[in-house]
Length: 218
Ligand SMILES: *Cc1c(COP(=O)(O)O)cnc(C)c1O
Image 1: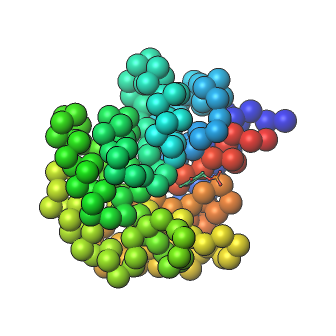
Image 2: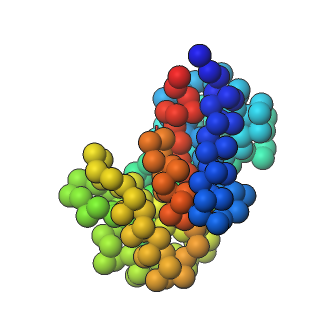
Image 3: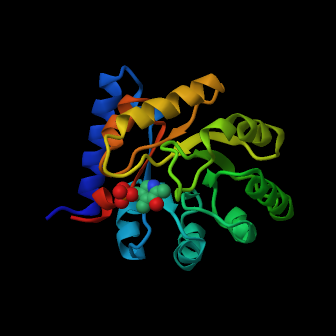
C-alpha cells in the first residue's frame, strides 16, 4: 500500500529522470494532479505535501469540490481539462485558472466575453485532435494555426497546445507531432502525458503532464 503523497514523490522522481535524459530542466515540467472522481480528503493529502496544480474535467464536479479548498489555499491553481460547452463558459472562467480544452473559436469567444465580466484572465491551451479521431474533442490539425492566432488576438494568455493521443496505440509519435506543431507556431507550452505515458511525454517535450489514476489509485 502506498499513499497519494508517496506516489506523487515517485512520479516527480520519474519526471525528473525523464527530463534529465532529454537534457531538459525538471523544473520546466508541471505535474497537474487530476482529481476527477476523487474526494477532498485525498486531495488534501496532496496539498499538504506541496501539490498546487490540480485538474478537473467537469465544471459541475469541480464546483462541488474546489471553492472551499481554494478559499483555504489561495495559491492553488485549478486546471479545467475536459471538453467544455460554451454555455459553461461563465462558470469555467470563474473557477479555472487554466483551461486546456479550447478547440474552437466560438468557445474562445465565449470565454473571453465572460473573462471581461468576471475580471479574470485564465490562460488557455489549444486542444488539438492529434489522432484525427471522429468522436474526439480537439481542433482539427489543419485549423490549429488560425485558432492559435485567434487566442493571440484575444485577451486570454496562450498557455500552449494540449492533446490526448488515441487509445491503444503507442502515444510517442503523437507527442512528437504535437511538439512539431507547437514549434511551427512558436508555441512553448505542451500539455501532454497521463498516468500511462507521462515519462514518454516528458522526453518529447511536455511542459505539463496531467496525471490522475497513478496518483490517486493504489
Ligand atoms: C482523466 C484525465 C487525465 C488523467 O488520466 P489518468 O490516466 O487517470 O492519468 C488526463 N487528461 C484528461 C483530459 C483527463 O480527462
